[in-house]
Amino acid sequence: MNIGLLVSELEDKDVKKICIGASQAADDKGISLVIMPGKYLASDNKDAKNPYDYQYSALFEYANTADFDALIIDIERIGRNATILKKESFLKKFDKVPILTLTEQEGFTSVNEVKNDHEQFEQLGYEAVCDACFFAKEGKLPANEAQKNFSFVEQPESDAIRTLSELGALLLNRKYGNEKAYGIFSEKAVADGIKNFGIFLYDTKIRNNLKYNWVLPEKISVKSTAICGKVDVFDEEKRIVDTDKIFSQFLKNKPMVLIAGDIFVGEHQLGIVVTEFSSKTLINHFFSSLVSIVTGVSRLSYLEKELLKTTEELYEVQEELARDDSVLDHIGDQDYLTGGLNRRGFFAKAYDLLKEEFKPGKYAIVAYIHMDSLKKINELYGHEEGDRAVRRIAEVLESVFKKSIYGRIRGDEFAVIEITDEEGKAENFRQEMSAQNASLLEESSRYMNHLQYSICEFSYEDNLSLREMLKETDDNLQKIKQMQ
Image (cartoon, rainbow, N blue to C red; front, side, top):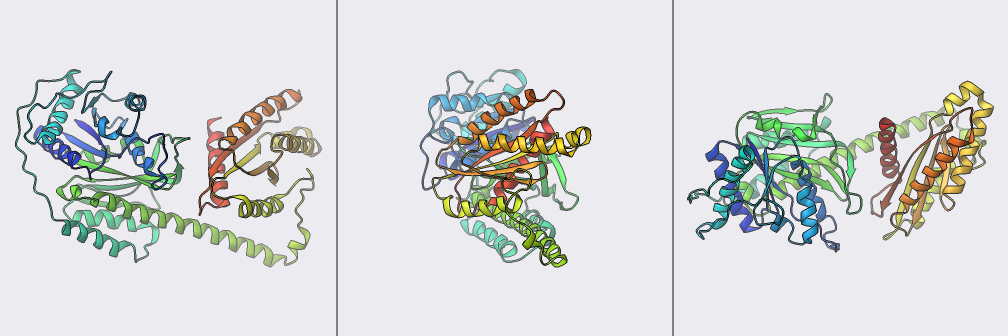
């Protein structure tokens, strides 16, 4: 049986005690337990000092999966900054798994009350796991467990500092090819007596913010694992698993207690790290520092891949220029067919716009528009009719994106960018494009001049580039195409 325990943070001394009791109950009952410290539900007031603290709670999204038979949720601490309605909404999300709360919450079943004061929170954690096991099987609570004695030996902080410094020396001052750095984590875990460890990352960054919450992707890449002491590293032949089977990678072997950490940078979710729960885990800031090192290495690996891709593109451009050193003399900013901007003109003006206007408090709206029927129009009715269809789309974009910079960047693709003070304006554009698409479909009885489009909105960040925004918008467009 697999039980999930959702708590706030390990630096809370009461949470530590709950985890100690819960882990002992898991050992006594011979079941598996996964501890998920996702900190706190975001309040309605943004924290200027820690604007991305809300990202930690994304870890809880991994709990609503087939990997668990029941969940225990410390809603009182997780929701300490949230309203009653927000806490209720959070609990209702877990519709795939039976849940128990550690404290009373109207409308939900809570674990049996612990009445003795001796090691109260350890007893609460123990009781919660026992109750969850019974509740998953019988659909009701059992009688109270007998009082237990807990023997937990704390490790000295020097052990944690040594482990973290060794990882830093191994990873942060060296360069590893083909993502081999991820294997170092698993090898180090095994060397330290941790036989189960894993790093799971998404192939692209997944945006998550307070306005547009992320949806847990269906798939994730395994970068490295240590399972029962056997280390595996995946790079070229990367292994893809379902996100709702992440913990099954470990739990199918034998009962164990695991702990998971959320990997994110800024507004983007990157993945998740899983390791065995041990006494070292409860040393203040050890686990969060470990996850931070994983985050740093994954971020570095991502940037190196992007740099390599950019370098290859620059070489391609250099080769084209070498074949015709006068090519720039023949390229203008204007698209010959629509009279608007061509690819070169669009990018030149887009970079200037970002440099001059994209500042704190501003939002960048980026759009890709694809004429998915242009090829068929050309084949059936000739290129002259296809040119008319292209010009008609240019008129549509002129109508919708009046204050934006837009251009035809390929034969059947247009790009748009606008800087605005108005948050949420992207949704207005989506509604206008939907209306224009409907009108286009009614205009011609001979063919369908249909548009596929992606419109994304980005809040200002110091290191947010046009390339990143266009890539995310294009990735979103590809997903839309796959769903249609």
